[in-house]
Every structure is written in C-alpha cells, then in structure tokens.
Length: 128
Length: 491
Image 1 (cartoon, each protein chain N blue to C red):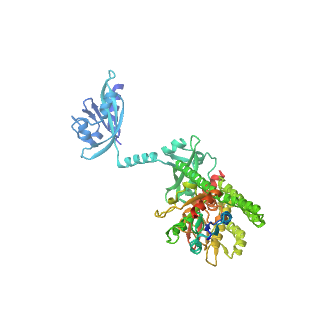
Image 2 (cartoon, each protein chain N blue to C red; image 1 turned 180 degrees about the horizontal axis):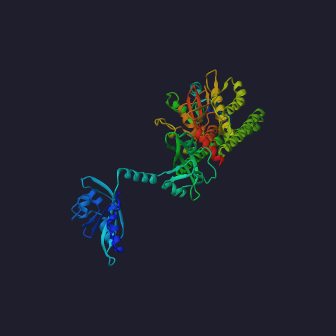
Image 3 (cartoon, rainbow over the protein chains, first blue to last red; image 1 turned 60 degrees about the vertical axis):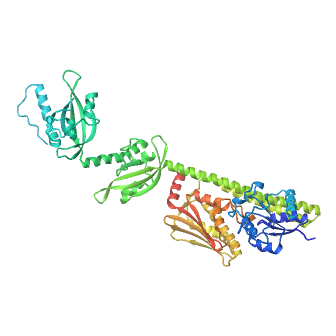
C-alpha cells in the first residue's frame, strides 16, 4: 500500500519537528522544509497528498506560495492546511490576503498551537 | 498758524468770551460748522468753506456730500436725538468734486434757557493718505493674530500689540525675559540678542508663561529696526502661539504610540503562539520518547522545550524595552564614538560570517545631545539586521557599513548592507506591523523599538532597499529639534 505523503512548510524548525512527530506516529510519511522559496520544486519532487503551510515566513509568504500552487495545473487540487499564528481558526479571511479573487480559499485553517486530535482528524479527512 | 489779534480791547466778561470764541473758531485747524435741527448750516469757519465750498443757505448733506436728502446714519440727527457727542468717519465730496475722507466729531450746543439742543457743532478733520496708512498700521499692529513686541537695547519692551498684552499683560517697560519666561536674567540662545549683534533675522522655538501662569509655546522670529545703516536701535519680535499645535503634536505622538502598542500586542500574540507551538511540540516529543523509551527522542523534545523557554525570556526582555515610555536621557556625546562602539561589538561576529564591517565617520560631525543607550540599541538592531540580511543573501563579498554624517542641518546615521534586501511587500510591513523575517530567530520588535527611540529624539528612520541587492537604513535627527528637546529636558 502506498503511504500518504505530507509536506510541512514552516520557517520554524521546532514546528516542523512537532508536526512531523505527530504525523509519523499516526502513520504518515513526512517531508519538511524551512525555506519556502524551494517549496514548488519539492512539491514536484514529492507529489504530496497534503501540505501543511505557515503564512509569515522570510523571503516569501505562505500565501504567495499557495497562490502559485493553485495556479499549477498538476497541483492545484492538492489540499492545504494553513497552520499559523495569524490565523484565528475559522474567522480567518483568506481573501483579505490575496488580491486575486479567483484563487480558491485553502481547505482548512488551524491556529497555533494546534489541537493534536483535531489536526489528525482533519488530516485523515483531507487525505482519504 | 494764524495769529490771534485783538483789535479793540473789549469790555465785560461776556464780551471777552464771545471774542475768544470767534477767534478760536477761526484758529482751530479743523473744519467747523454749526448746524440747526433742520440740517441747515448756520455758521462755519474759513477752513470749512475752503474745504467744502460755499455753505451759506445750504443743508449740511448738500455741502458735505452734495446730496439732496439727509445721509443714512446721520451723526447730526444722533446729536439732536440723544444729546450726546458722536464721532464717525465718512467720505464726502470737497469743493472741487473730489472724494474726501474725514472724521467728524459732533457735539450738542444747548440753549441758554435749558436743556433744549439748539444746534450741533461739527468738527471735521480730513484724513490724509499718510494718516490712513498710520491708522491701518495701528490696526494691523494690534489685530494681527500673533504676538509683536519692540525691544530696546536693554531688553525692555518698548511696545507690545494687543494679542501680546492679552496673553502676557500690560508689560511695556519690563524686560522681555521677565515677561515671557518670568526669568531674572536673559535667556540663553536669545534670538533678540543675536539680532542686536548681527542685524539679521533669527528664529527660535520657546516656551513661556502667560499672565495667568499657563504655559505658552511659541515660535519666535526677530528682526532689526536699524538706526542709520550700522546699528540696531530696536528689535522687533514676532511670535506665533503654537500651543495648540504642540498639543496636537503631542496627541498624534500619543495616538501613534497607542497604535504601535496595539500592533505590538497583536504581534506579541503571534510570537507567543509560535513559542507555545514549540513548547507543545517539545512536550509531545518528550511524552512520545518516554512512551517508546527512546532516549534520543526525549533529548530532542527536552531541547525543544529549553529553546522555547529561552525565546520566551528574550521576547519578554525586548517587549519590556519597547514598552518603556520615557523621555530620552540626552547628553552631549560624540556620534562617531557611538558608531565605533557598535563596530567593536560586532566585529568578531561579522568576521566569523566573513562579512566586512566598516565605520565611516565624517570629520565634520559635531557633538550632539543624544541618549547614548538608546542610539546604541538602534544601531545594534540595525547592524544585527544587516548581518542577518547578508547571511540570508546569496551574494558573496558581503559588506556592512555604519556611517555618521551631517546633512543640511541634520545629523544622520546610516547602516548599509549588500545582503538579501527587502521586497516591497516586506518593506511596507517592517515598521507598521510587528514583523520578523527571521522565523524563530527574531522577536520582530527590533525595528519597532528603533523607530520608537528615533521618534523620541524628534527624528525619523527611512529605508531604501532592493530585493537581492541590499538595504540602507538611515536615521535622521534634525539638529534644531535635538536642541529644543535638550532644552526641554533640562528645564
């Protein structure tokens, strides 16, 4: 059986370690990067089933990467969970960050620090 | 001047009075006429006839204004009605048909028997162009909405306009420094003194005390009133009350401070969330390690916990330094020394990262009133950012330059690097929102704190940056503001 691959993008290594620990112990295959400017290349390499993405990062914001992903014909359907300190759960207004209104909102937002149970439940739901 | 000539010696008091009246009537340098209650001119002196022309058997309005009916607001009518003297200014037509501007004083002349007003006597004085200018000058002097004083060489006030008198009291004859500031000696840096010595215009911003003991902020300009061509006889001092402006400025600074506090709190929450995520992560990995009896995992989790506790400490420290609301402690320091201190502090770190860190101190830079600890913090933040930007950039041969120089009356510090630079999106955020591009490495308070310290000195910070090419942060302190602040903090 093919494993479910999850790519974690956060400039904070401790966040990546934490999310990887949760996901690995739940049977997922994880990849993590701290530099978002390499993210598209890694996506093409890995073909992840899900992406966990931070927003405020140096060099490039998570929103900018997300916009590129949604415009890519091969990966526009890859589900994304935004995990960020600027997110206030469901109240997050994605389109206030993005000028291009044709870009659909991400599948899920989660506020840091995450609730592990809810996070795993969402991951399962989005990767099934 | 016509001479009073008495031809025949009169007999009796009554006669003498009549004679004096007749003579005086002619001698008065004004135009005099007597008008009855039907507006007929019954008598007039030679001056009157000379100015307005023939008056015999004519109504006053026909003579004064060449009209066929009484004037509106007729002063003569007022005299007959109210029995009181009236003063008015009017424009009439003289005997040559030219417009004439005059001031008329009208008095009642009562009948011998009682209270009945028999006649009105009118004294009119024509106002020449010079008189009018003089009048306008007086009005201007008194009514302009700023304080004007004329000061003598002994610094005593010779003249003061209405606005000045209203705010500082009737103070002619007193020393300007007593009046403006309730001081016993001259103010240091007195602009009037400078004008007395060089005859030039000088400006200054001052704080004085009004007659009710209230603080008045004013911007003052002094200029010379010359005696001949070489010496200054008096100095005219014009001040604008900028108290309201000062209050507004204070309110804006306060609003900005509160705005910055709001942004900081939002940013603080963001930072705390990231730290919490790290702490939660550490806890999770330690638990996982304990459950699996995996020592390496326990260690990894423990390190995460330690790291994030340290971050909490550093965040709290930065936050406390940012939230300190205080006036800068200004002392005269050599700005070049501050730059050298920073170079000393960072030279090893820079060398380890193969970054060339250089000072550039302009020899023209003079001593300046600065809060050395504050400026040290600003330069530390900027240099540490510049080094980080070099580490994040992709080019080799990185350089960070710390410059200090004078530019158009401003003291400038500049920190320049050829590191990663900032794109427009980030440039907009660096001062306005709590922002870090360093991930876990920064608290995002460095530039906000820097801006706050610079603003407390009356200065500003500007950034010029290009993505991939580097950044230049320039701190600008106008010298005059530093001086004002220095004086204020000393008072």
